[in-house]
Length: 372
Image (cartoon, rainbow, N blue to C red):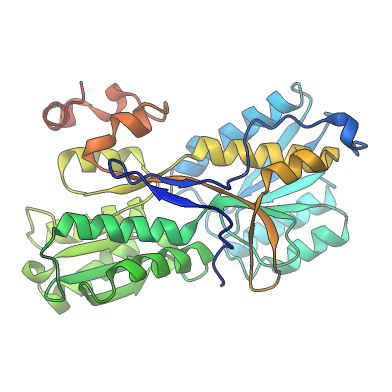
């Protein structure tokens, strides 16, 4: 898959490694109703198809935020038809077909399998139902895409991993790469971004594409890597997300490792933030799910109501998929989350409270990093 067209400047803030995407679509853009002839009023039905529940973000953040935002934008007259495929591509295809049959006004699609769902995307298009790809870029005639710059996510992970290894990192350092599922186009981009930072600077001693992103599969892969490389010879582990980082850590602990090497993650799950506080996981990538979800809801409502000026303002970037070019897109900012900036990220943004992170088990570790 080709990477997103980068029509924006990138700046890295040294303290938090926040990537500011200057050309991102604007949130809180007010659509001018006089600029278009709305095709629908506030009584819109938005179909929301999310891929799985193993990653807690979908149930905890994406769905509730999208639902709340749609209600806000439609004065509580709009509704969200929500379905979760639980990592089953065939189930998601059936869910999407039902939404087409039910004649929802627009579909927000976070694909389990971006290639396999292309047929349903075309069916929706033929039925006059726009489809916005959410978080993962599905194939087929997608009307728009909202996500994060996924190669940049991988670059942030790789760069932060090198920082953790220190200035003396070289090709004698053996790194294990625990990549995501091959059915997820984002995983390929995370991997490419990370490799662009790691290649030539360390040795990738083992690399795995982890089926379905499942922590247990990552644990099994890591067990193989330990047997191949030796538990004391692993300098760091690139894990594409937090769930798999948990599996990696479980395998290392079972092998008798007491001091974890630097391990990356992504999604800023609560358990991952606690592992970062405790020192088992070095970093995660914090992605503002509220910003992504709110943008998706705004795009969906603007599109179905015919507010094209607002829709265009929300999709000032563009991306290519294997089937389509120049898809209007909004790419949201990302931040490297470490012990140093927990307060400035997930706590400041209201994702978690100190009391949620610093339960009795983590009270001492929290105190050591200034979380009280």
